[in-house]
Image 1 (spheres, protein in one colour):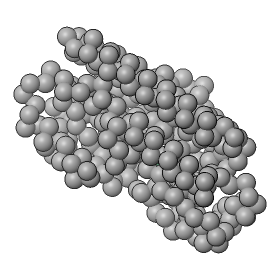
Image 2 (cartoon, protein in one colour):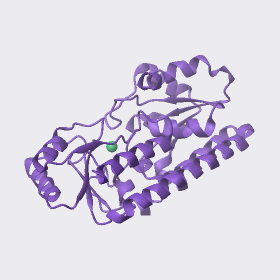
Image 3 (cartoon, protein in one colour):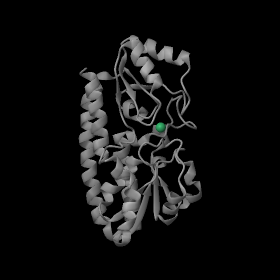
Image 4 (cartoon, helix red, strand yellow):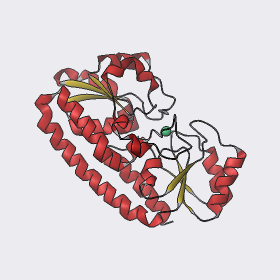
Length: 279
Ligand SMILES: [Zn+2]
């Protein structure tokens, strides 16, 4: 599966002759969403390959060629893709379509005032991200409009099921905390009044001893629902907390590298949380 995703760019290029449009996506979740809506009708490429941290990514020469050739680039925005600045005219920053009202929240881990991980809130995906993407595809390729709309509707139904599952699972834990290696799942947990605390103090900043001690103290107090590690991040901090508090930690992937659809990304996260609750 991992290998399959890595080779997507080159494989897709070989068979691109029949596609009306070429869409470049930056991170895997957007690749999954665009692929599901445009299935078989648009050529879709992925820039940030599995295992790469999107906060430190910069495109290779071969990828710059793919970017240059794209009809549209679907990106997150909110500071996540500074390397796309030269292509801003054809870049759609979907995260920037979400009203700032929902983003300008008290969050000391934010980059330039805004936490960029909006794709991890299924409600943002349903109400802003999917509608923004489907509208852009319809404008670029009006011939396939009905097809894209039908696929988008089906995707929204699946997201509704995810949202119902998440509510049922997490509502009883309002007021608790989760500790994650970096604040990726901030919006996801905020929906249920669960506060996300980050091991990293800002992106890529190793935690201080004082910060780790604070997190250990909180975990020992019994108010922490779970400890989570992300595959793209350094796990030394979360390991220390787990060891000191005799808790286990679980991996959740904000990029859903192993997931074959955006629903699967969320289902994997919910499975992991369920595992921790029933421990
Ligand atoms: Zn991040």
